[in-house]
Each structure stands twice: as structure tokens, then as C-alpha cells.
Image (cartoon, rainbow, N blue to C red):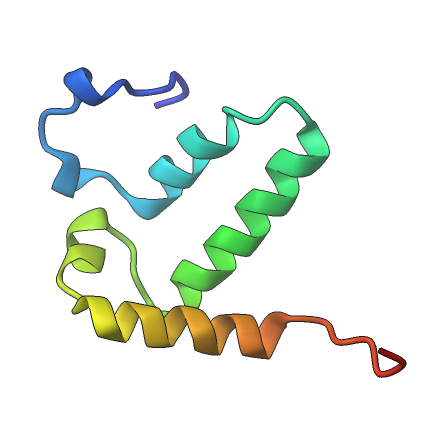
Length: 83
């Protein structure tokens, strides 16, 4: 699935893998550097919460997703000790 999927073309969205969705999303960016960076960061997040398919992600309660995003950002944000 290399082409960008439009909303009205989606049949069984729960069958999509997170990697397919990330690939489609990053293709919207013009810069190859931005595509690589986004793909790396977003993939790392979903790997950290052990989610492979969109249906799996949909089963996680929203408050838990928020907590997992915060935890991921806290663990992966580079902090400048000077500032």
C-alpha cells in the first residue's frame, strides 16, 4: 500500500497495520529527512506500546493512551542541561 488512502476508500480500517498508516502519513511530507524522522519517532512510540494493528490501538482506553504518550515523550525528549 504505497498510495495514500483517502477516507472514502477505507473498507476495513481495523485491518490496517500501524506501519502502513505511518508510511501513508509520512508520504504526505515533502522532505525525505522529515519523512524519516517522523517515521522513526512514530514507529518508536507504537513499538513501545506494542501495537501492530490499528484495531489494537483502538482497544486502549484514551486516558491510558495519554499516559503512554506522556511517558514516551518524557523518556525520549532530549533536555539541554544549560537551559
